[in-house]
Amino acid sequence: MKIFVPTSTHPSKNSTFNKIIQNIVKNLKTFDSVYCIWFLYQPERLKTSKDSDEMIVDIHDYENAVQVLQDVKPDCVITTNNKYATIDFAFSLAAKFLNIPLIYCKIVDFTDLENSKKLTQIKDNFKRNLRKFVLKDPGTKRLHGSFIMFKNKFLFETKKKVEQNTIGNIKSQLGSQIFYFIGNLEKRFSDLADLNLVNNKVWFDVFKKCGIRDEKMVITGNPYWDEYFEIVRQTDRSKEPIRRKPIKILILTTPLVEHGHWTEKQRDEIISNFIKILSDEQEFSFSFKIHPTSENIDTYRNYIKKMNVESEIYQNESFWDIIGNFDVVLSYGFSMIHTEIALIGCRMILFSLKQNDFREMPLVDSAINSGFIQKCNKFDELPLLIKKLSERKIEFDQNYNDELEKYFYKFDGNSGMRVAEAIHKFLKKPQ
Image 1 (cartoon, rainbow, N blue to C red):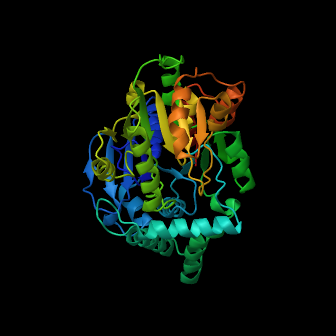
Image 2 (image 1 turned 45 degrees about the vertical axis):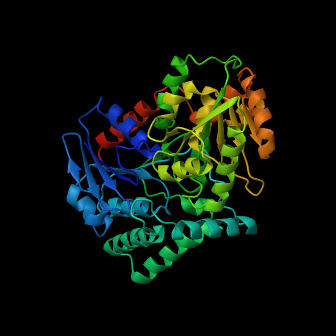
Image 3 (image 1 turned 90 degrees about the horizontal axis):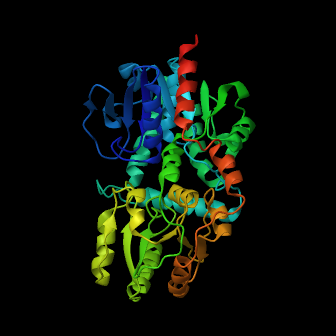
């Protein structure tokens, strides 16, 4: 079985999407031999590679998605359901054009509330996308905008190949840009896939409103969370109050600048204040855990050097491999890892600058009600809040299990197997 997967992150990196696909492949191998073809789209050109289990091909070697699929000849294409994700949608169109089975998966567990027609949100979306366009890629030092244009050209050439007329092609390209400012949720998701792997009942209802038929959807849970079922089951982390000194704090950053939500000045404000306040307290020690793929470690080395402090910076290490050395997490913005923290039970302070109002990730509200995640929006209140939180026992509120079912469907470590069974059954039936 040859499966084809577009990804923006090298398969060696533990991005959310890559972890999901690797889980699916592992479980598919219980039914059949599996060969995974990764289509990597990054600003820099990378050499293709090939071994007995997988192949990595690079976007810079091709002009359109039809050309790629004709070259590698997969048995199916697996990608995310998002018409406005340029490369993913290009392969959706190409798969349908070439009659290759198309499978959609959704990588997140929350419905997207940012696509609002409110004037304030339209302005925020405009600013965010403008920032993304003019940001420089830390690896190539080129503007992100040049690669955004490159990807849009790839989609444009794909649409030409699938015989869409030029005027219609231009209109749809413009429409996809307008979406980010005045987006309509029901227009975001495509009904092209032959099989839709759905995380939970919430997403089933969303897709149904978007016109996807019941018989094309299977609720499986999200394979991303399977490893966390094992972490929860095996964890021996104490829920009792912290007695040791100094209190060890892990600053968990989020790539808000890299994703266009913040300016560098906003990041400077929050990181510089964190360092100043924590380093002034003899009862505290702190380290950084930065995003494994989106952030540049030199940025944080410069903060430490400039402020003349000692602090370790983790990047490629797994959060769950290092968190046992820390007592309290200090974070901001929004990230899947906030849900992980709420799921497993770690003390965290979620800091918010007054001018920002980011969405709460799934389960975080339950953890706030339980008390082991707390919100803060004043820098001078952080020391006392950290001390009090470290003295607090970790307990889960009564809604915890209901929230698990809502977002994770069946939190049993078997979502990847349910996905594999659904794919195997679908590909084995006559097309």
